[in-house]
Length: 489
Image 1 (tube, rainbow, N blue to C red):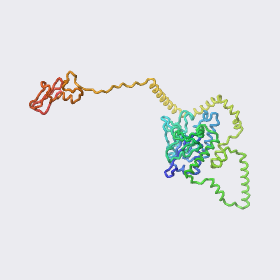
Image 2: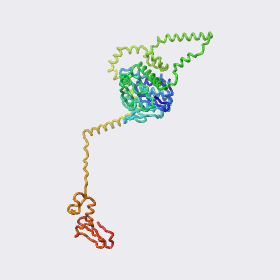
Image 3: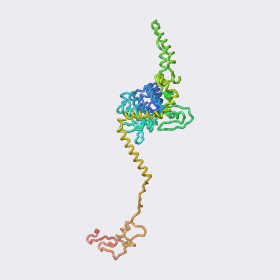
Image 4: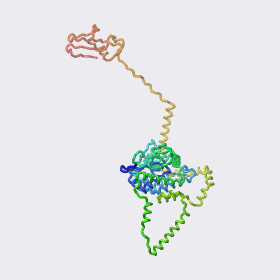
């Protein structure tokens, strides 16, 4: 059970176009338990989760605006033949323009200390959590780096404070998930606090960069739709599912302390004041009722609601209107003609001819946008090529020219002894030799052997045996000082 006294954090998982699920969760939290957002210690996020976390921290997370933005990006990707892989689809530019438009000017001040963005450093692949921002441009650049998927979004990764970063979900897709006071939100069914609950009998799970994903067909479908958006209707259902999952979490943990706004509206209508009985008020009220009835009768004829009725009943009005507007198909003769099946088939057949022209045009536009960053990017590519070439060279040298192990001589015990010609065998032991043996061989004052070559001092009473041939040491004994010995070399 969630402990409110110890404080809490929020962590949003990266999920690509499934970020509309986070919009539903955020809408429920703002409506039913806003203190979970305002009083949270930190709000973590990776990739699309970082975008939603930034909107929450900056106070600009209007459910209608966020939902419409996600839907617009998805429809922009779906209207092309190759989807988001089409050369003319520039996801980085779309995200950057949307962030500059929606985030407030003091967004960096609101986000510093509370927002933690998960990044993956290109040089070593390590995860970095960034929580301090000096300007709005730095905040937007960090969000772009966290949402940059290699090859999918481009080849050259963006920079943040002079360092190259890519999608934070590659190294840590759900930051601080192991903490008990962190509320984890993920659109994939698993062990997260707020996530879908699939009716699957498979209890096996796969943990991908700290994100728990259960083995199920529903999760497999969600994984495929993370980078390739589904129809707007499916995205609307995912948003509604996020709202329901967050509501279930609040009820299970007894965090739902605010009454529902729908109940407030019904109560206000029930306790309204009695209508005025004057003739003027009666005429005005009758006109309003007639106008309302006319609107209700004409509404179903003009608007065709694309979503299910059960979704319309549960979602709040603001989010419901945004979903309805986003799911509407564009009207007009051109859109009706282009949506016909023969024309769609003809467009796919003409793709080999039209794709090179569109690619050249989009490449020219990208080059124009790339001009200010060309020096830094070219310098980085040169360093990268040098590093790759050096690694390949060293690996090839190790395989083709193996390094021979160095010749190491064996250490053996050396004995410094005189040559056998000058060694009296009688003074040396037969097996082992030591410094004590050598000393006893050079200065032996007690042995009676070899008396002919001994020098005796009658005053001292101590015989001294010495052989110049054996040691090469000259020894002179003074009669005057019997206690001292003078040795000369």
